[in-house]
Amino acid sequence: RANLFVSALDDAQTWYRYHPLFAEALRTELQELEPALVPELYLRASRWYEEHQSAEEACTYALLAGDLPRVAHLLAGLVPRLMQQGRVQQVSRWLDQLPSAAIAASPELSIASSWMQYLRTPTPEHLERLVEHMEQYVKEKPREVVVSWVELQSELTLHRAFAALDHHDVVRARTLLQKALRSLSAQESALSRLMALRLKMMLSLTYRASGELATAEQLLLETCITRSTDLYDPLNLAAAWCLAKLYEAQGLLRKRGALYERIFQALRPDTDLAPLPLVLLQGSRAAFFYEWNRLSEALHVVQQVLTLGELMDPTAFSGLSAFSRWTQVRIQLAQGQVDTAREALEQKGPPLVPIPIIEREEPTRAAIRARLALACDEIEEAWQWASTSGKHFDDRPGSALSGASYFEYMTLVRILIACGRREHTREALAQALILLGHLRDLVVRLGLDGWFIEIQMLTALALQAQGKTKRALTVLAAVLTEAEPEGYMRLFADEGQPMSHLLAQVSMYTTAAPVYIQQLQDAIAATQPESSQTESHQPLLNPLSAREHEVLLLLAEGASNQQIADRLVISLNTAKLHVKHLLVKLSVTNRTQAVVRALALHLF
Image 1 (tube, rainbow, N blue to C red):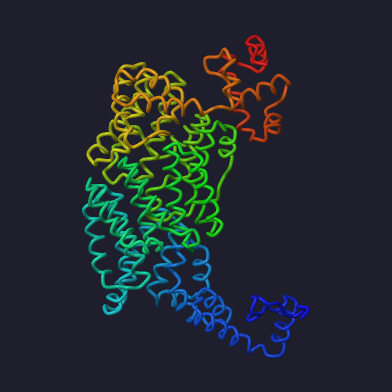
Image 2 (image 1 turned 90 degrees about the horizontal axis):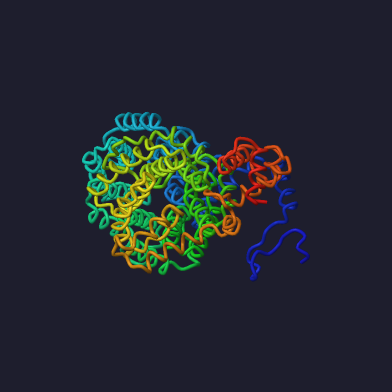
């Protein structure tokens, strides 16, 4: 009655839990009196949980019982669901407990093991060795076993298709994927459905790579939207994410918005959904709201993504959330919170877990950091990424250009334009235009109008930086006409004052509505409210930011770089960069001259 030994778990008092100390005492006594009975009790618990559809608990107790064949059997059924939920570490821990023979005897565990090996060492060389190992493994199996292990063969085919696409052999990649899908068509297991989804998503990328966009769209539509109840299936949510990425590349923002609306209206808030595909889809949705300048909605969705991340393994979530965190920082920048964005630049996340297909379409953390550095005017850090990225201005990307590679090329273009503006060098601007030309030829051939709009917008900015204002206005005029019907906003607004100067002159060149141009101007004007008051009274051509003004005040006090870093809670390297930028803007060479110059300009 006093709940000293047990406590009720439900109002009907059907279920009870032992007090932890009482349970520990009983466990100790059992271990002393009947140690041989312990494994049997764990095994009974495992069977009970399995009978009550709690396979994870059943697997845990089977492991405690030391019944490894039973663990292998239970884990084989769990693998598809655990992977869809992003619980990579859990799968890895259980696999590590099993002997290699038990893994080799199960197609599900063999596939899961190959995934874990790739996630631990995500290099092309390791992937190639992994494929060779799988090929040898299949050859060594009796023919009747190989026929029944169609999922493992499909996984092998998927890796071969990845390799073919990386070498821009679209035809071979598509042939391999279609053959694997035909082999899987008669299978009804959870693993075969997961494999089929991955194959179809990959197949859609081959259609995009050949410009067959309608076929790619139809394939994904059939996968992700068949019946309203199917939307609860995590596999269909993943396909919906892939479809949203296709619409993004095509520039079909309204169609993309309608897809999100249909899906999230059908999903009940209390539905227990797998977090991995939901994080993907919600991250894409947040970026969509951001592009339409619906900042509060975008921030709300980003916060939902970060909450979902608490349900996932940190290593898996770190990769999936990188783009959502980038959206969060862009919102902060759009709201004028430049210093908050700079703090994000200081943060280092854990190593990313690469997930095939997803890693082809979502930008890497390194590229995102470079874009963030550029937004914070840290051009040196951005250039450091550019010099090691493996991307070059004279590259001619193939038709199988991934979303991740496209993001990297757009980042490189922006860095070249920024360098051209700052250093007044024509070489960097010419290089930017060369790369933009190569990319333009590709996306026009493929019909990827969304990418085309961004390429042409950056072309206008590069021409402007070269002093070719009339040509820049002509290019921008055509882009605005194409962008207005789809509601593009932040793509232009995030380019700041250079874009504002062009927009102020473009009305006579374009058929875009004056109200649309004014909306873009208003979005740009709202970008830096924190520093607007300080800058409005500054007689500098390139005004000091709010943070640089703080650094200037500390310089006047005689603070060292380390003292500045300590006072502003930033790194020493960031403090040095602020001082360097300050000296450049004041056109001086040392700290004393900076203070004298600031006094003369009444900046204190």
